[in-house]
Image (cartoon, rainbow, N blue to C red; front, side):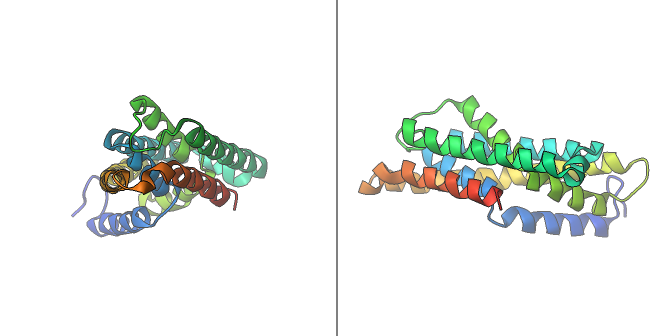
Length: 202
């Protein structure tokens, strides 16, 4: 029986693939883990920011912007280095302001915006959606609409999962805050940002 324009088997296959991909550790998960150490609000808002970035990539794929990144090496390279530079900036800010320390408050809106940017400035995510969504959306004049629906579903699953990751990370952070390890948490978070930047440049 068709569901929202999709065959049931196609939708089930998409959900299985999406969940498997979302559960695979990656830069977004690591970033939300680091933010979750700082506080539940920061972690959840970062997760929602990442999910919003997913919607942006979905829109880009639907209108063909991601195709430009695939066919224009210079555009891909520029975006890749901008993303890596932004992650390195986050690493420096982490050490300078201790913003990932679980005893330090952070501006909530900043957590959301940075979550969006961490996801949006990853060209590999754009190319992934360009390859991933069309195979399930199919062809025809309604394909962009179906891609948008699939992307929104992916973003919703991402938001739920990463919010859970953030809350779990925060609980671990509170336990660490009671120990002597708390003073080194910002260094761990900064290290995560550097690793993410190196991963993006691969």
